Image (tube, rainbow, N blue to C red; front, side, top):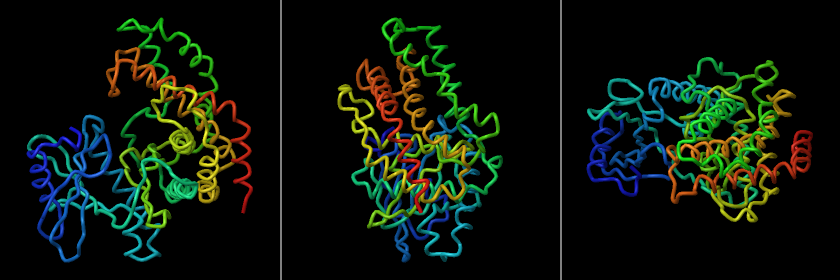
Length: 376
């Protein structure tokens, strides 16, 4: 249920659940918070003298079925980040990392009588996040945030992190799903999208590059965020990096996936479901700024092949998203929420137009990557 239509009963349940955690003071209020679409999120205000506020979330266990693994991941990653930043002092560490609040019996989460799972974080004060990038300074900060995040986790063993969403960025898995949808053709849509399928299958081999480099042990498996939207970065009042949030999708992966997904969301000058394809052009200054921020941190630990893989991630992620949208369209729109019957088809075409623009500007983008790699 989306937060704007949450029932009084849901709010009451949120307060009852919040009381299961070691929160300072008495709970004064619980209000829906944020713009996330997966978990239900509430801001909890108390009467504590510390003036601390909390973030209570009802975990969507239909998406994240392994709640134990999910919460173990988050605790492990947060602890590692805190250790990396310990030299800054406790107060600064609390601003730069997420902090889980345990239940009264020492657990990471609480399961209520309805079978819902709840968790609590300290709400980091005096921060801001943006759904849409507005300036190159913000893009630079976003790039720096995700580069720093990967760098700080680069010495944490990825085998200690559970793959909570198996095959999330595995293009072979996504292509197999597409082929299955084509074979079933449940709602007789394959014939009308044959031109899009031809375009997708023409590029399939080169879109396997990252997977093949990984299988050849040329790309190290690292701990990656896997949902590098700009609104998953908290900035301070001066738009400087403060904290990377929304750690649900932190999993073992390749750095190019994070880089490519971030670029997919910032470089497109139009909306993800823009029907007028002429409006889909590249915002190269935002790409340049994000890249500069990212490499200012990440080039310290990336190997040469990882750097070369970044541009492959830029091409792959919008392509993979197009594959997912088209699969759902052929299947009869069973996964993504749609606003009208052709919504997934429009989304597919928009993502493929972005792929086309990226291909046309391949040299421009690789030159920017090279220039930032070689800068001091």
